[in-house]
Image (tube, rainbow, N blue to C red; front, side, top):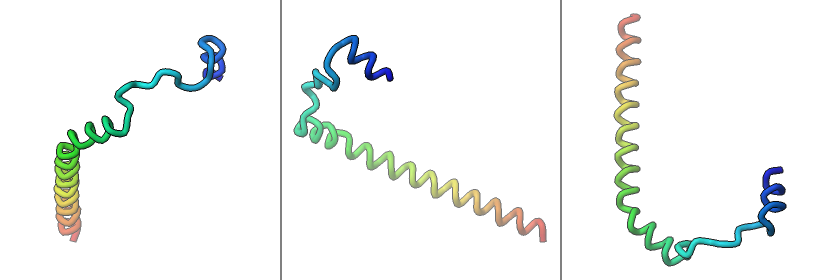
Length: 68
């Protein structure tokens, strides 16, 4: 496959050069920096979903009532 072609062309299989930013301490710092924004985005998304669901259900009920 393509992995074999890359290994044949460039040498040894597997990543050789990892980012210096790929350490547990730096990843924890980055995660903590964006945690509040992520929670806020999740809360907003869940609120949007609840609102759409409520309006959809209201529309379904109205359509059923018109059929009666």
